[in-house]
Length: 326
Image 1 (cartoon, rainbow, N blue to C red):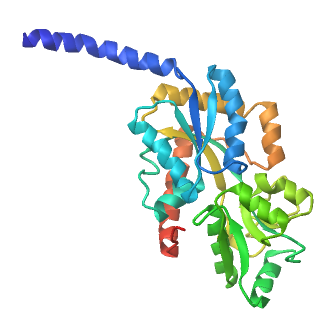
Image 2 (image 1 turned 180 degrees about the vertical axis):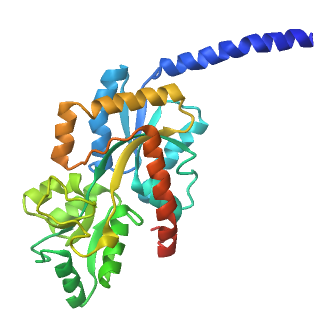
Image 3 (image 1 turned 90 degrees about the vertical axis):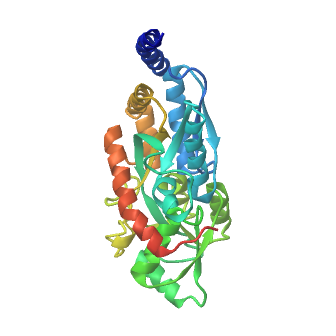
């Protein structure tokens, strides 16, 4: 009897492997949810909508955007990680610096930024920009902004997408670089932040280039510096933070596509291949260039290694800054 059960189990194992492999090969079997851990209108939302259409064409299933903003993107990341426990298998998430690198060092999050996810594809790098309304702050560079901050009787307010968001961290780096104080004003989503900037209710921000490019072009906002190591092709006349005297502000904000760690290897490989193909199409290349995204091709392994390096280097700095949730 025991021998029969062992024989049956042994025969079943290859069959189980074939079934699991077949499921991965036929993935997706139903609509796929793309969690965006920030509100509509921001860079993460733009990226999700940019890749959803070619993924839908490639796989023949709807790819549905699900915005889950809050707590520096960690609420959306937590929802994606929870999908693994539910063996959902049909959830992707737009991964970004805030929920993967900053958030876990600041919040008590229910996920591990590396072990809870499969980090599949780097979509692009986004320059963050120091931006002022010239009618409120008539300065032309970071040193001029620092002088204005010193002369102001009260701290100048600056907007970010939330407490602990990358714009907040870049603002802290600016203050440290020049020894000045600004007043941080956190917003719940990019749309609210943009509306207040457009209305003149707040004079400055540190934010991603894609969602701010139109405001720069129409003169509502003036760019003072970009945070990337090299100048942005969309703003070639704008210096880097290092060139402007604030190397501490240098950071490459990235956006990628990740999934719960339970996603099978074959499915992850298919998603990577589809995204890689999409990012090489003339239409998407032109759109990303228009929005100011900077392409940095990496394999899934290279993307994962990059994130591990950032988690290891940034987490101690975030904890040392003693940033508290809103």
